Length: 113
Length: 114
Image (cartoon, rainbow over all chains, first blue to last red; front, top):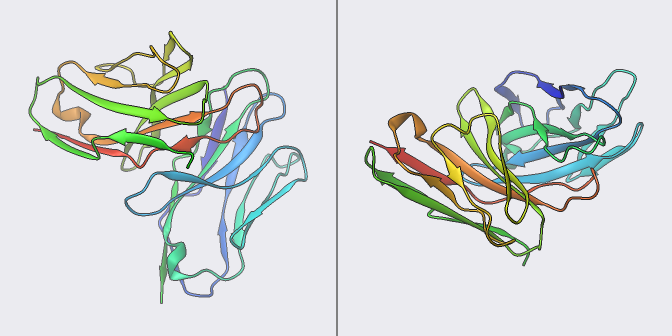
C-alpha cells in the first residue's frame, strides 16, 4: 500500500537558518504530493502541492520538488522565522482511483529567535 | 468563506456518556473524513465517506460511528466513550474526481474522557 515517511522531529533551528524536512513515499502510479502545516491550536492547512514529476510547489518561502526518481518531496526554506514554528505533514494522494490520502507522521519545527 | 466547522472545540466528559462531535462543510465536497491525532502517532483515519449514505472504516474505527445523511454534515459519534479515546480529532473534506485536490481541515476538537 501507499506510505509516507518523514524525518523524526523535533527540528530545532535558529531564526534565519536553512530548513530541510525530508519526505519519501511509496505509491502505485503517479500520486499527487502535498505539504500541510499545523500551527499551534489549529487544524492542518495546505502549504504547497505538486502533481507530477519535476513540479515544484512553493508558498510563503517554502519549496518542495516532486522527485520521481528518488520518490521524494523534501520541504525547504532558505531562512526560517519564529512564526514558522509548527508541525509539518507530508501527504500523498494516489492517482489510481483511491481518494484516501496517506499522511506522514508529522515533523515538529521549533525556531528560536 | 470556505470552511470546515467542528463543534465542540473542547469537551471533557466521563466514561460511557454518549457524545457527538459535529462536522459541517460549505464547499459541496463529496469526500469527508475523521482523524485522530495523538503524540508520536501522527494522524490516523477513523472513518471516511465518499458521498451521501456511503461510509467506510479507516485505520482505527473501533469505538466510533459516523453517518452521512446530508452532503455537508458528517458527525462522529462515540456511543460509550473510554479514556483511550482521549485525543485531538479533526474533520476534513475534499473534492473528489481528481487526485490533485487537497483536503480542508477543521480546527479540531480536543476530547478528554475521564
